[in-house]
Each structure stands twice: as structure tokens, then as C-alpha cells.
Amino acid sequence: MFDLFVNGFSSVFTLSSIAYILGGVALGLVFGSIPGLTATMAIAITLPITFGMEPIVAMSLLMGLYIGGVSGGLIPAILLNLPGTPSSIATTFDGYPMAQKGQAGPAFGYAILFSFLGGLLSIFVLMLLSPPLAKMALKFGPFEYFAITIFALTMISSLSGDSLIKGLLSGLLGISLAMVGSAPIDAFPRFTFGFKELDAGFQLLPVLIGLFAVSEIIKSSETKLGKGQKVQYKLKGFGFSIRDFFKQGWNGLRSALIGIGIGILPGIGGGTANIIAYVAAKNQSKKPEEFGKGIPDGIVASETSNNAAVGGALVPLISLGIPGDTVTALLLGGLILHGLSPGPLLIENNGDVVYSIFAALIIANFFMIALLFWGMRLFTKVLSIPQYILLPIILVLCVVGAIGVNNRLFDAGALLFFGILGYAMLKFNFPITPVILGFILGPLAETNLRRGLMYSKGDFTPFITEPIAATFLALALLSVLFKIRSNFKKKKKIDSNSIGA
Image (cartoon, rainbow, N blue to C red; front, side, top):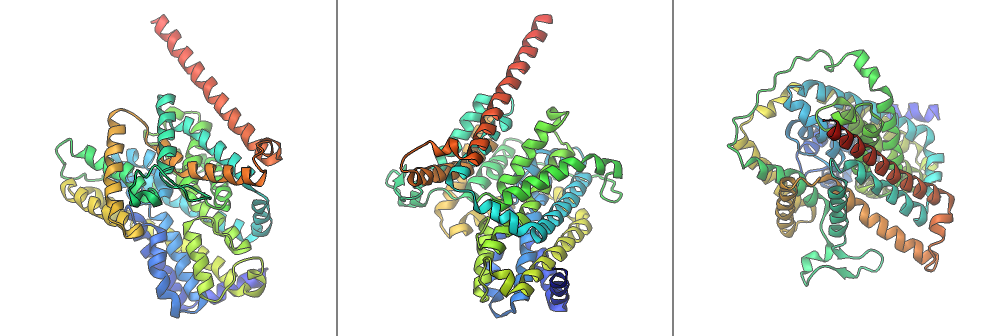
């Protein structure tokens, strides 16, 4: 294995491969930093360009785009409260409040360093534990996936803010919106009301950008738009001490493990990993009330997990030929285009290419931290751009990004609809994040429920008798009971304080 790794590095250490990795990371950062443009889009646009390249050079470029595209989302998340990619949703929760308090530098420092560490750890897991981990994920069937999705949906209770009922209603709204369009398995049209455009349902990007970005732009228009903010920050190194770094040690490691674990499970990816890692960090923290107000723990959890999901998502792709998310689905196409067959025989037949991919990922990770670190001062200057210039540009980019998903004008209308919906939710103090969680996880739960029932011929028993599925359903039940108990104790404490006063 060591010889293959050395050979992989020697194959990538050519001027052309290094230049393509650097260019890929830089382009990926640009795509990731613009709301609506994602790593998926960057790879989709670049894939035809790789046709004439050698497989190792082509995969080096694609790996650079992947790392850059996932990492670039932290820039608008911290500076503008806009998640550049679905993987950076949770970064906005504490990154933007820190930037508003003049701590944009340290916020960047935490995000960049822990993105690097999360990505590096996941690449080592990809290299060392790929076969056994992929084998474990392969054992999961529809019963297990349904149970895991139900467990993940219980996270809504932790993202509900002050009102659990409003959080649950938001989650149900997300699940309902996900049901619009063709049903999974049999493609029966639902809730389309005769509109053919709704047959394909709502795409994730217009929903995400509308709820998080357009709603904020509409909200900003309520007041007189400012001339921009001059970010004052003094930064030495990454903006925090070694002691502060070690304080985040367990949080970073736990978030990386969450990201790797979720990345390995096909179809979930970094968009869910960052939210679950954030919730886990909040639940385990001694000061959960400070989350959402600008605390580094939230940024560390989100950015470590989303970069860790990169290596995790590549485990089933390389070992079994199963893409873990949309980006790895495109990478699967890239491998096939270059005459490679992803699957158990890939390492045996094309070990040089596989270990070159590992080497390219490590080099791209180092380029990512260097480009973000040296460009930090440039990025913070975005805040000094007057809002009356910046917000229209962002709105145009959002519309371009929404239309670019499927080249449908309908998605621009959907973007506006979800922008207005998000604004209404903000006005009535409904949390938005549970909508996204319901929208992403709802179809996963429905698909695996129906597959499981087809497999068991309508019998629900396997959902609670299969050991892994039963464990996750039990964890889901415990999670709900814990939240109810926690809310009850909180209410009792408030009541006793009111009586005392």
C-alpha cells in the first residue's frame, strides 16, 4: 500500500497536475462562494473539458474543484449570512453573528483551519478504512435507512428555537413541499394541480437560496440600505490561541466523525452533516444558549463536518462504485468517461489512478487552506461594499444559480416564492432550518419506507426487528423523550422563577 501511495504522489507531482489542482481549487472556491453556484455545477461545467486529458490529470482537476467547491461556501456564510452551498447552512448560524461583532478574522480562522483538519482526517479514513467501512454501509437496506432518516428528523426538535410547536410545523412544511411532484418508486404526480412544471417537484437549490438568501434581501429592504461595513480585525495567525484550538479538540473530532459517517451513507452528504454536527455540538455544550449568537463552537462543528463528508462520500464511490452525493455522482461519470470502472476491482486494476486521487485530495486540501488564508483580508473587504450595490448583485446571482440547475425559468419563480415564504416565516418567528431538514429528509424517509414495505410485502415488523434499524429507532425515541423532558424542566424553572418574582 505504501508503494502505491508513493507512486500516486509521484504521478501527481508533475507541473501540469499541480497547476490543474491549484486552478481547480481556486475555481471551486469561486463557485462555492457565490450563492447558487455549487461544486456540483463547477464539476458539471468542467467535465467536458477533461475529455482530452490523461485520467490522472483529469481526476486531479476534479478533486481540486470538489475540495474548493465545498470549502468556498464558508465565505458568504460568514460575511453575508448566505450559505454559498448546502454544506454551509450551519456556518451562517454563528459565523455571521461573529462577523457582525467585528470578529470576522477569528471566524474565518476557525472555519479555514477546521475545514482543513476535517478534510485531511477524512482523506486518511478514505485511504486506510475504505474497504471495511464501505462493506458496513453496503449491509444497510431500506429498513436501516428509514430508521436513520427518522433519527435524523428528530434533530428538528433541537433546531426549533424557543417554540417546539413552531419548529415541528416548519419541519412538516418542509416534508409537505418535498412531496410536490412525482412520487418516488412509481412516479405518480402529486399536488401538481395541473401544472406540468411541478411534475419534477421543487429543486433543492431554489428552495435553499429562496428561504435563506432572498428572504434576507427582502428583510433588508425594510430599512434604509447602508453604505457597507468596514471590518476591523486584528489577526495573528488564525486569530485564536493554541489553548482556544485545543478547547475545540473534541468538538472538531466528533464533527469530523459525524461528517465521515454521513458522507459514507449514499444520498445524504455534507448538506445534512453540517446541521447534525451543529446540533450535536449544541446539545453537548455547557453553554447551548450562546449558539446562534456568535460562538466558535458552531463554526467548528459545521465546517469540520462538511469537509469531512468529502472523504466519506468517496469511500463507497471508489470501493463499490456507489456515489454518496450529487458531486460524487458526477465524479462517477468522470471515471467512466476516462475508461475506468468504479467498484471493487478499481483499486486492483487501476491502483495508480486511485492512489493519485488520494494524493490529489491531500494536495488540494493544502492549496485550499493556503488560498483561503492568504485571501482572508480580501474576502473581508466584501463587507465594505455598499448594500445597495451588493444586494442586487446577490439577487441576480441567486436567480442565475436557480435557473442554472435545470435551465428552467420556472425555478426563478420558485426562488421568489420561497423567498417570500421565508420572509413571512421570519416575520412570524418560525424557524427556517427545520423546513430544509424536512425537505431533504422527507423524500429519503418515504422512499425507504416504501422500498422496505415492498421488500417485506407490506409487513412493518422488520422495521423494528432488524437490529440496526431497531437501534436507530430506539435512539430516535430517546431523543424525543430527552427533548420533552428538557423542555418540561425549562418550563418548570421559568414558572418557579415567575412565582418567586
